[in-house]
Amino acid sequence: MKKIAVLTSGGDAPGMNAAVRAVVRKGIYEGLQIAGVYNGYQGLIQGKIEQLELGSVGDIIQRGGTMLRSARSPEFMTEEGRAEAVRQLHANGIDGLVVIGGDGSFRGAYELVKLGIPCVCVPATIDNDINGTQFTIGFDSALNTVIDAIDKIRDTATSHERTFIIEVMGRDAGDLALWSGLAGGAETILIPEEGFAIDEIITRLQSGSGRGKKHSIIIVAEGVMTGSALAEVLKEKAGIETRVSVLGHIQRGGSPSARDRVIASQYGARAVEVLCEGRSGIAIGMQNNMVVDYDLDVVFNPSDHTFDKQLYKLSKELSI
Ligand code: ADP
Image (tube, rainbow, N blue to C red; front, side, top):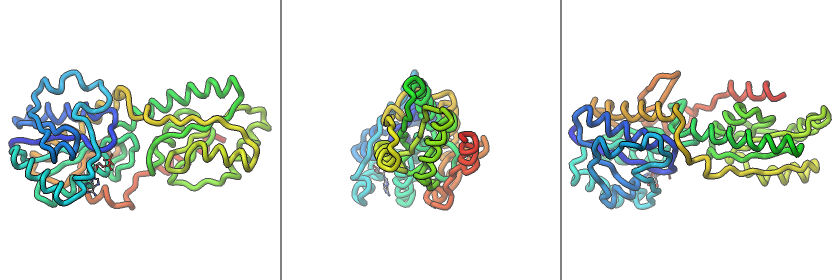
């Protein structure tokens, strides 16, 4: 390994910059040349590649988004697009690639591995939905953004004695809803990994109001249904009036939390080490507070999903 490249791809996440910084600085520390690819796989196909120096990644550790910018690339989904990407990598003398992104980006990297390009993947998505790691970069920051919103909504819910439905992101995963619901003291948390009975929610809301509890917070993961769809069901079935708040893209932005900056630094540096060890087709992650690396196959194996059932059980016990 003499020269490696780094790119960010797919949905952005707070902490991506800290990971880019770690790849660049650790790479230079190891005596490598580092190239930055702009706009993900699309930029790779277009040859948007620049050499990065120590100073190129100064003053970015605290910034949300990604200085390398991100993109979704339908062209990279084609054989011709990927062949052009490989050509660009060879033309720029690049021996290995660090891909920072979500599982779609990992699939893209897997295709490059099959074409003979050594790749290591760093998980960065607010959804925390990558198999084989307990934490992705961006999850903790998004979680803090959601909790901040819940706390604020709770103030008005209490003042006006209202039930609020808060819809949070997460695609098909419920982690953001579960963790934020638990940390924000929500009365009800709906996540795609666990079924729910609407009658049970209605009974809880009614028995709460029977006890004099006039406000309630319901967190619904976008993978279950929209907040407004849930509001409609509650109104139709039981005449329960709610207010809906859809947090949307604010969850993807903002300065990364301390924890995200730390794990992004660890993951980025480990990715460089793994490439230097001559390995490829590997993902970096966290298990029981230890940085781990594992085969990309694990990411694509649905049976390895890391949903925390104990945490869900606890959230139910604490919101009686
Ligand atoms: P994320 O990485 O956040 O999950 P996407 O699913 O949009 O985001 O994936 C990002 C990009 O990765 C896509 O635009 C595409 O270029 C590439 N990609 C995704 N899936 C594949 C695949 N099966 N084969 C090749 N490239 C893929």
